[in-house]
Figure 1 (cartoon, helix red, strand yellow):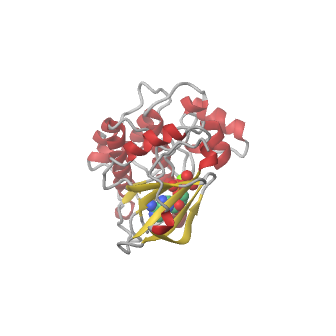
Figure 2 (cartoon, rainbow, N blue to C red):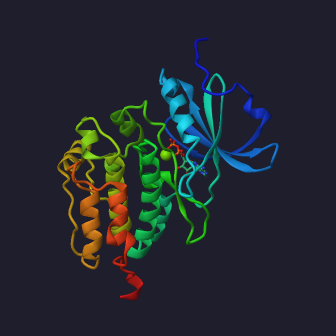
Figure 3 (cartoon, protein in one colour):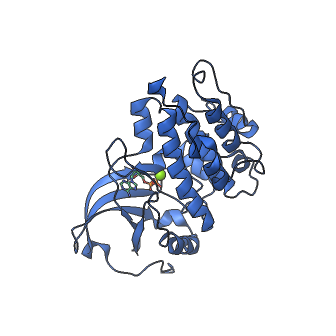
Length: 282
Ligand code: ADP
Ligand code: MG
């Protein structure tokens, strides 16, 4: 056996009782589990070692950084285990479900609610960027509500670990290129800016309830993203403030140099000020 040791070789079944499946992905499964010592419930992400294919060193480095991240809007990585088949990430359990499902249920958000949500996501991503971590896969399925409450905080999850997997492969696997930045599709070297673009796509969807880039045909969709070809269509955007549109133009901005950083985005009046409209008041 040539497998590198990523974490200590303790048998996970001696520490956790596995319960039901919380989510399934292309290379992993997330399972609800109970800590046998403390009775605390956790979420365990089980990543197939086969999917890592020699990228275990990268995962090891990434894990050591992720363990240090502590932010109210980031799902905490508590511990890690491994065996011959899997690498296990023991995570803080959140119970409010995916942002994706709330968008589907609500249709769209008021500007004020969207602004509050985007602010939390920007703060989490700003914190990660300061530590040199790029998420690379921000989308509503990876943004989880802490609790089922209407005013629950949101947490970023599923980050950093996709380094080893190339973006086109990841998109084929997930079937959702809609959130990917143009420079990624153009196969240019890319950085932190890709996360800002994705937050722009999420902001757009929150406000109107549909995606900025959509085409049944993937190569048409790629072409639209590469050109940054999106519009604020009438009538859906007619009642949305100029400030919201200005924010989105700076965040979903084709030019990587001109695109806002998290810190710039956090200073925009739509986030920090009072320009986000409360639809129910007008
Ligand atoms: P993948 O790489 O397969 O996308 P994720 O980490 O995004 O893996 O997890 C898949 C799904 O599992 C999420 O979309 C969410 O529904 C659920 N999930 C992930 N982490 C947690 C958690 N900490 N608490 C509760 N559910 C979670
Ligand atoms: Mg995910």
